[in-house]
Image (cartoon, rainbow, N blue to C red; front, side, top):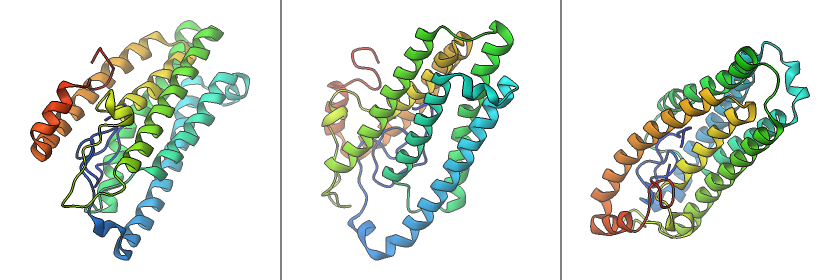
Length: 257
């Protein structure tokens, strides 16, 4: 269900995934499909695009601050590949996700800004650590591994969102659906897991072990808090059905956590 490292605002469909609230599969009302929902959707989509554009600009600025030079980007193909994939991932993610319709634009933006700040710190810390502590470039195989892990996380997070929408296509307010198929068959928070991998891949791109360890710890603490809260809401909604689902799945990592 959720990452992430990089958490989203609560969602109206009630699924606990990477940043969804409530948890994995509580669904929006059929009224959301009526014309009256369109103004919110347009407003929300415009807000998301503005947010992502600002975030990506801030990411580049954070990296440049850590490196001291922007021309560095053009000399390191793994860094460029990650940034290009990350930009595409962020915009694709904002298109397929849903936001809570009962929150104001200001609340949505404030919530997401609070979540993005630790991401910016990670983006600045990794190149800073590599440049000013170790110097030079990370081994190519380490950077390639970081890029592979990030791409894997992007695939997992986006795939989980798409599956969430597919498996809940017949949802109504009176008939919520607990999604237990696809990625949700193995872990309860695949979107969190995917975003966790995306963020962890960045310090590996630079071969920055200190930042990587801190990212794992901070991400784990954040994910645990979000998952605990969302699963409590899901228990209240689905009762024994959700308890049985918990007993048969892992939260974030199959057979581990």
